[in-house]
Image (cartoon, rainbow, N blue to C red; front, side, top):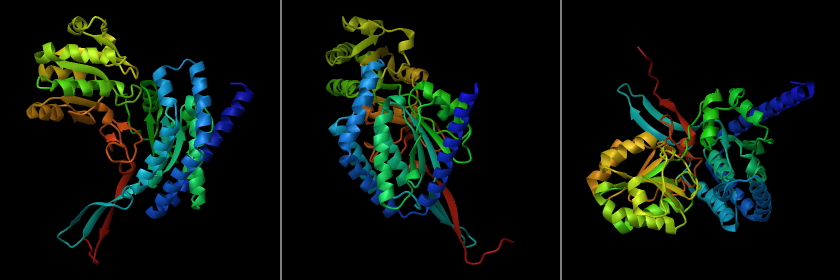
Length: 428
């Protein structure tokens, strides 16, 4: 490394450590800030987003133009793009978070001991959260708002493709904090797209950062899990399945499959593979395939699916377990619910999987035996979203088994402590 590069590296390290120190100090302030004040900040932030809509959209227009020039796929551009309705949805989402019950200080369990001690388990903020995400600038608003709601400071590192949009949104959150005399450093963004900044955040900031939350593709998640020296809340890719069971209502199955795949193809809750039970293949497979193709979806299928539609492309081995994030879906015929479960266990990511059936016993078996973070019955996988779950918004869908699973909202960004009340008891 030459002298100039070494100086840049040292300067970046100092800058990142400064972000961490400021976040730790801000976290202490937030932990002492009443919930009413944090809610007032969130309402101000929503107003700031609406007031700054033109600036946010102008920044996003540049990001999208750059993305197209760099050859981002149509699905990635859709994840990146904002319009008036999406900006309004962001603001409304922040307001919805303000209306949620305050998780901080909630007593989540309490009991009395024979010696008269009263023990409470009480929610507390995690502290400082580092969030690394790609493409979607609305994550800036969702993540900042959820961290604030739960009393946490946050260091945000968005993708380079959305840097201008995310900065414009973060500025709204910072202005709202300042307006209520809270430190703007409670919601910070890494001010550079240098990849080494991510390395510093993962490796060197353990004294400041309590948990890392990655939200993005497989490459990002793998790097974070490999390099991080602080706890990671895992959010794996969304390889979601919809299984059309033998007892599925045909019209319902047709609606759900098309919606689950095509409503928005670039989100993690989009169905990437459809499984059709061989017992209903004669009645269900061809109409479902035709609906998908008519909706503009490329279908890649096994031999039975290829035979069901002239425009179906033969699936390759790699199509089973692939996150397309595009208008492409893999379709396979399976021999009953056991085969469907085995396929999902083998090729899924534990994110969201759905069964379409009028058979309550089959639905119960699917939910009981499939260890995915979200299991759905007769509903589109596109409902895998914190807002749809009544959480206001989410940071992501956690697919791990430690601390949180499924949509990560404000309550999932807390830990707990024990508060013990006595009347002078001493231990013999």
